[in-house]
Image (cartoon, rainbow, N blue to C red):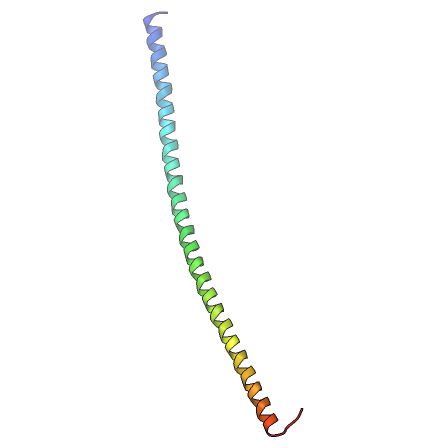
Length: 95
């Protein structure tokens, strides 16, 4: 093997390596873009999840208040009925 053939082989290997480096550089660039998009998407999902959690908490609190109000209305109606029944029994009404 002559030194020219050896140099030719080295040059070919260098050109091949240069091609691989360029390809890897492009792939890294694409991966960075993909990562940036994924990061933005993840942030949007996190914001949506947080907002949904807030809405769920608000709805739970609202539902609890509505249930409490219904219980109070029921208690009031029962007390009014009890008072009417007592009043009727005092006045001599029978059912």
